[in-house]
Image (cartoon, rainbow, N blue to C red; front, side):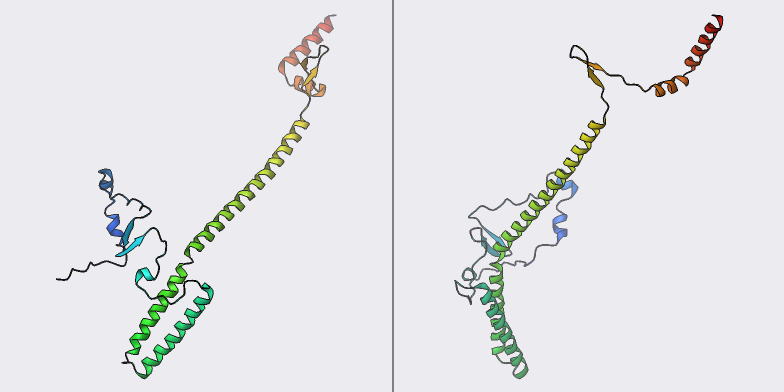
Length: 220
């Protein structure tokens, strides 16, 4: 008796299936599903029915039972060009079979050849993923460094400008203290007499004092 095949979807469940598990009531009662723990270094996990191992970031073609069309040591640029040319040639052959003899069994063979070429090309492109991740991280770090250097440069310019403004303000302040004979500091009062007289004339008590002084002078 054959074992039943497991039905595995090639796509994740719709978002509504996940959202319905995280209602406010489920969260309040601690019924919401917990996030899965991160896999350990040598743990094997399944995703969409395919077993993956953390030891290898990109699975080899041999481990997936796929024929390898590219050598072990090769120039990726040249191999990509060769695979691209092979795709074009096999696609033209497939068109010829469809035109001349659509029922020929070679048609399915060409389709299988095209699929194998696409898989090898896709695998070859995937091998650039670690390099792409490192280059992306390097570019991000260079951008952050450049932004921080520019920010520090602008801050230094503003700091120098503020220092100049503060020094100019201090140099423009009048002298408030003077040294006495004993070497101590005493407050130096410098009042403009014109300002003093103008302020006194506006004072009502100043007018009364002037009137009293005139009466005393008249009596004398």
